[in-house]
Image (tube, rainbow, N blue to C red):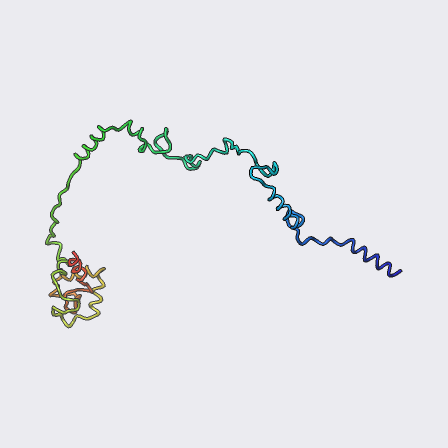
Length: 221
């Protein structure tokens, strides 16, 4: 009796189990073998110009409707970007490029008159001499640079032994640039005299001023 009960239980469990899935089954067909057979049969039955079914092959010529054959108008502007044109009759080009619009208001005679008016208004301005510097402007650092040939630090003028480094730094700090310091140095008696101690080495150049850029500019001309 006990063995009979066990056998019944085993049969009951076997009947409740899920069927083993087909490893060859795929999406859209029961198994791969069946899909391959159907595909081979379909490929062998296709004949050019013959219809397989109403759903798979179109045997007649394709007819396009008017809406399908109409392409978008490339000349239409975006709704948010209005076209700027001066010719409402032909919105694809501007009024200045439309021959019909230009020919309506211009002619060969009008072109001839306009060219004649432009030639009459044309003026040739002759070059004039450069203005001369007045004596009240003071010495020119450019003229001084071109009139010298010594290098920076090459002493040409005697200087007092009282000229100290601290005095040099203090007085040079009063000028925004070395060009301004050199102009003031020349105006106050330089290069022979150095009342403010701007040129302690006696080369004629105050506060690190260098005549080389002015000399080079003349040589490059």
